[in-house]
Length: 306
Image (cartoon, rainbow, N blue to C red; front, side, top):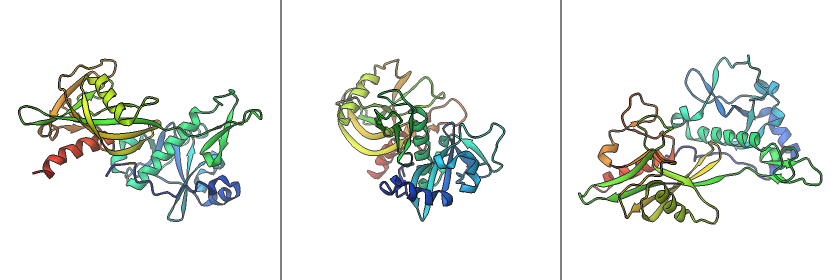
């Protein structure tokens, strides 16, 4: 299963615009706390903590962002980065980057956590109007920001940046099919992943796949095939996963993008570790990422065809 894609919430897109409707939901809500882009997890068992209104009443819960309803529970995101005292701590929890535990969190909860993280980050980075420069205030239960300038009143909505991510594969003359993986210099040693990049204005997704692979690795691809998508709010991407056949194999990397790129067989990939493992051997990306999903899907195809 592709993590972060199983959001169970009814977003109540119409109802949440009614302040009275929203006011009645806050006291019984479950609150997802965000502190400098980190989620609150239990220290004991690495599960996410959802707090009650009573537990968060000192942190301006009336500014919380409405996320949605699941099984008669209404969920809110509350950024406490500026309201949480430095000496304040939750005895049972700690704030952690969700990617540390993302692959082991229950899928529905994981999707709620990244939604909360993404919306809080968007609010933090869009405090001023892009048209007139005046202050923005929260609107529509946190799903918009409105300029306070009466001559402007411009509404800004959360942004999503489309990015293609692709597993490129080729059947070599030795009869072994291999996939193309690259690495960035900033990653932990040994980590290789699929290629990826943002979609340019006026560009189709398929054209973006071909362009990014050519720019990053000098490889010509054909027949891009859509596989799946994944919200990736780190900070605001929507990853659109593809597989594509390579019609060339000589690699010419753009060193501004990659430090290395190589072809790997399925048998080689089966001996890779995972991001975060100790040592300097080859490693695959995190298990919660669509990159890992594409790699695992491609490796499994060989088993299915036997």
